[in-house]
Image 1 (cartoon, rainbow, N blue to C red):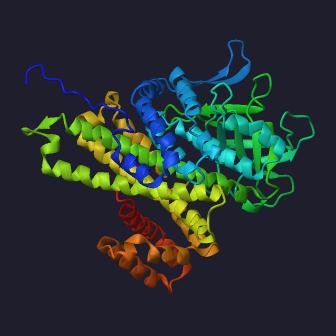
Image 2: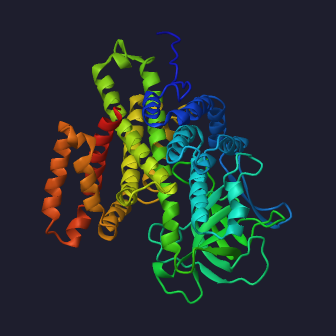
Image 3: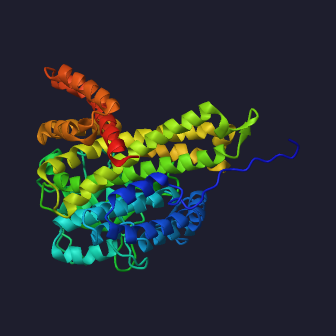
Amino acid sequence: MKNFYQDGPSLTNTYRADETLQKFLKKVLPPEAQKEALPHLDHLGERASTDMLQWAQEAESQPPQHIPFDPWGRRIDDIKTSNGWKQLEKVAAEEGIVATAYERKFGAFSRVYQMSLLYLYSPSSAIFSCPLAMTDGAARALELYAGNDLKERAMPHLLSKDPKHFWTAGQWMTERTGGSDVSGTSTDAHPFRESSPFSATHSLHGTKWFTSATTSQMALTLARPDGAPAGSRGLSLFYLELRNNQGQLNNIQIHRLKDKLGTKALPTAELSLQGTPARIIGGEGEGIKRIASVLNITRIYNSICATGHMRRALDLATDYSKKRKAFGKILMDHPLHRETLKSLEEDFRRAFAFCMFVSHLLGQEEVGEISASQRVLLRVLTPILKLYTAKKAINISSEVVEMFGGAGYIEDTGLPRLLRDAQVFSIWEGTTNVLSLDMLRAFEKEQALPVLLEYFKTCPAMKDSVSSFIDKWTALQKVLGQLAKGTPEDWESNARRLAFMVADLMTENLLYEYSL
C-alpha cells in the first residue's frame, strides 16, 4: 500500500449513463419527438460531463461579488460573476433549456423533452437552473396575462436561443415579514406618469429581503397599489426591468449578497426598490392568482433539479464504488453496500417517474389537451411532487456523502456541496409543511381528493392488483377513514403524512406503468 493514491469518482456522458431516462423516453415520446430529442439529449449529456462541468467548478470557486461603489464613490451596485457562470448562461440559451417548451413542436410532449434537458443541465450548472426556473415562470405569466406590447418586448428575449439576446428573470416575493406568507407584503405601488420603454404603470417602493437571480434583466414581483386592502387580497403582480437604457439600475439599491448554506455561485441579494418603474400584470388585486402560474412551473423545476441532483450523486457513488477497495473487496462487491445503493436507486426512479408524469400534465395544459380531472391532478400533485423530491434529494445526498467516508466530508473533493446544495430544494418555492397545507387547499377549493382517489382506482397498478400498490392504497384508505369525521385541525396535523402517502402511492403506480 506504499505510495497508494485513491482515484476519485468521474463522470461520462450523463445521458448515455442514464438507463432510466433513456428507457422512459423511448417508451413515452412519440417517434417524431425521439428523432430530435434523443440526439439533442445525448449532445447535452456530453457537455454536462465536459465543458459545463469545468465552468460549474469555476463558478463555485469564484462566487459572485457585490461592488457597491465605483472608485470615486458613485453608487453602482454592480454584481460581478465568474466567466464560468456566464458560460453556463450561454449554454442554457444555446441548448434551449427554456425555449424548447414554448416551441411546442411536439405538443404536450414538448414539456417532457424540455424537462429532460433541464434534468441533464441542472447538476452541471452551478444552480443556474434557478434563474431558468424564474425565466420559464415569467414567460408563462406574460404569455397568459400580459398585453401584446409587453409580450412582444420581453418574450423574444426570454425564449431566445441566442446568448446575446437571451434574458433571464427574477422572482422577488420574499420580504422581511416572510416568503411563503406574502400577506404582509409592504412594497407599495404608486401611480407612475412618466414615459418608460415598457409603459410602466406604477413606481415601486419597498425592500425585498431575498431576491433570486439578481443579475437578471427583468423580474416579477408583488406590491400593493395605493388604496388596496391589507392582506393577500390587496396584492398585484408587477413586471420590472432592472436597468435602464444607459445600463444603470432602475432606482434599485442592492444592500448585500446573501451568504447561504449552499448554492454559492448563485447571486442572491437583499435590495430596496426606491421608485422603480413597473407595470401591473393581470389586473389590480389579482397578484396571488397570477403568481400561481409562475409557482406551478418553478415548483416543477425544483422537482426536476432535485431529481437531477439525486442522479448526479448516485452516478458519483456508483463510479467510486467500482474503484474503491475496503476490507479486501471493491465496495460494489460488499452485499450491504450494494443493497444500500439499490434502495437509493429505487427512490430516484420513483422521483423521476413522478416528475415526468407531472411535466406531461403541464404540457397537456399548455396546449389545451387537458381534461378537467387532469387539471385538478396537476394542481394537487405539483406541491406533493415538490415536497417529495426535495426530501428524497436530501436523503440521497446525505447517504452518498457518507458512502465516501472521510473524503465525503472534505471540501476540496467537491462532495460536501452535494449535501449543502440539496437542502435548498426543501426551502425554495415552499417548505414541506407549507406545501402539505397547499395540498389541503386543493382538497378544499378544487375538490381534489375525490379526483385523486378516482385516479388511483383506475390506474394500471390497481387494475392489475399489484400487491405493493394495494398495500399502500389500503393504508391511505385507513387514514382517510379516520379523518372522515375529523376536525380541520386533525386534517392539518396529518397533512404532511397524507402528502407522503399520496406520493408513495403515485410513484408505486408509475414505476409499474412505466416499467422503470
